[in-house]
Each structure stands twice: as C-alpha cells, then as structure tokens.
Image (tube, rainbow, N blue to C red):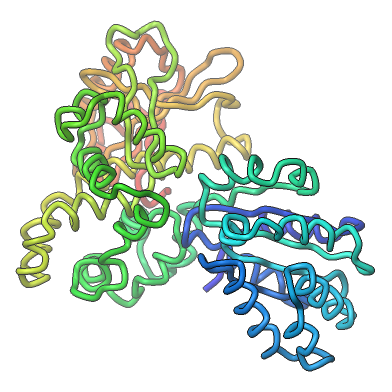
Length: 461
C-alpha cells in the first residue's frame, strides 16, 4: 500500500515538467520506498525501469539486453539485442520511449552504483545520451548506498557530475504515515510499530495489521524463517566488511554503552580504531552522535554520546543478536515472554522521544507553537536529560520531556524535570510533557492555571 510522499511526488513532477532532459540522483536506506515512489510517479508516463546488479560490465549488458528484448518495442527488441555497449542500449531506450508519444520519457535505474563501480563507460554514455537525444528524457538514478552517493560517487565520475540536475535523499517516513498505513491500530500500537520498525515502509509491509504488535514480533521477526529475522545482519553486510567488529559495536550501543570509552572496554579495540568504525557507521546513517544542546552547563552534561539511529537495527541487536542461541533453541513464545516482553517498555522509551519530536516539528512548521523554533536538540545530562529543546531567534525555549513507562505522570515528575532544566541552565519558557500513560489530576489543574505548561497524551499524538 502506497501512503504519503506527497512532497516527493511534487518534487519529481516539477523536475519532469522542466524543459530539456534531467538527471536526478535519488537515494536513501534500503526499504525506504524509493522504487515504490518512482513506480507511483511513473504512472501514465512512457517509462523504463532497470534494476542494476553487482556483476561485471559484460554480464550487466547481457542482462539488460535480455530484459529489453522481452519487452514490447516497435522493432521487437532487435535493436536492444544488437547493442554492443551502454551507449547503444540507452539510445534504443530513448528512441523507444519517444515513439510512445506519452510525453517526456522516464528512465529509472535502480541501485545504479553497481553500474558505476563495475563499468567505467556508463556515466559517459548516459551523459552523451541526454545531451544528444532527439527527444528530452528524465533519468532517475536510485541507490540504497548512502555512503557511496555522498562520499564516492562524484570523485569517481569527476567533471561528469556537472551533468547531474539534482541530488535528493529520500527520508524515512514519519509517524503519521505509519498511522495511515496501520489504519486499524490504535495510536499506541502504531507508536510501538514505529518504535520497532522505524520509518521503513518495506518493514511495515512485513507486519500483518490483523495481528497484534506482539504477535507480529513473534511471527515476523523472531520465528524461524520470519521475513525480518536476519534483516539486521543484512543491513550491516550490505555495505560493510568486518561484520564481527561492526556487530560488536552495534551490540554494545544497543545495550546502552554509548560513550567511546565504554565501547573500547566492550570491544577490546583501540579508541582510534573504534572512532574509524563509528565514522563508517555514521556515514551510512546507521549510527548518530548526539551532542548536548548548547548551553553554559557543560559541567553537568555528557560530552556526546553515540546511538543506533536505524530503529530496526537497534531492535535486532537488542532482541535477536543478543540471545541468538536461545532464540534458535527455544519455543518462540517462550523466548518472547522471557527475553523480549520485559524489556519492550524501556526500548520504546528511547523511540518515544523521536515521535514527540516529529509532533513538535509539525506544530512548528504550521506556526502552532508559542515560539518559532530555529534550533533543535536535546540536553544529555549526567543526572537526567531534556528530551527535546526548541529555541527561537530570541533564545526563548521550549523544553519537552517524554515518558513512555510511567502509568501516571504527576507533580513529582514535573519538579524533577525542572531540576534538570536548572542543571542545564536552560530557562523553561514553555514546558511540554508527553506521556504514554495519564497525567495526575493535580498536574492537570496546574496546567490549566499555567498556560506555559502543556500536557500531551499519546492519543493527542
């Protein structure tokens, strides 16, 4: 089911309508919906799709020619079958799309990095085709390799990069998209799904909305031959070598070891080596480094911590990788009850912050907050943290605290939050409290009198 992506479809359509040929590079995490987006966009257009594979140039050309020959072209595919190189293949596709007379031709090449890595002449052939073609065409190059596109691609092709019209990183989908996808789930259930799977629609499709979230965890992640059981390992293997080192670091991060020295002790690797590996993980957007929101409170703040940024990867290392022997030997239900269920609430706590952050971003973009935020972050303290800090040009702040685990959030929690704000030396001009449980009557009464205090429960989200 295709949901959301209105902004991205509008962006593609605007590029398509511009005069002349266009070359776009669209990239993002595996499963984030790049192919589905282009499939939706290609409707009612003369389009050709090719999925590149990691193989030699000769094999790539053979596969492409064979696929072209099986499609319905005016010449029966003979020209494609006889093409000796990429220039011939691309010229054939361009002529065939123009002959359909359905507007500007659209060529989509998926995982295009395989063509660049193993074929020196592809980019030159593509550039020449777009420059010399009789009819204008729009080419979209897709890739799941964030690191390749952002680090390696332009140096590899040199001056040919000048022919690229635009780069567009496709973000993960948001919580509201998840709510629209799982229409029969409650807000809390959608939050749990989003906490586990993140904004990757390919993972959402693996879950059965007719089952409870717990049953989906059992059957779609934990069970033998479950579609997502080995997905965590596949994510790491897709781009990284030395799986043993990366798995060690990701396992440590997922268990709460988020400082460099802690990872050094956990892994036995030198700090210098760990820094290099963490840099590689951050380039692939699998790990992020969080610095405390800038204030005068450095004495009370942690210097900076590392976190797994891809939510499903964190779930995998928390609940699959960590007890894999037991997972294989035990009954799935028994494993879930012993090793997963008791820790799920704490796992959701960390991700609840991200959903609340998305909620505030939506309000901010629609001018529905008491300030217009221009800076955002979190303050990570040694005795407690501020989950979200929003600040405007005049240094006015919104401080937000998010609690997933408590059944009742009351005045005692509010006082603790105020103490954390004092340690951070951040003035709480406005305070937003988010809770998966309920707020006490006393706290509700305080919020009625104090308009700078906002209480937001999970149903409001």
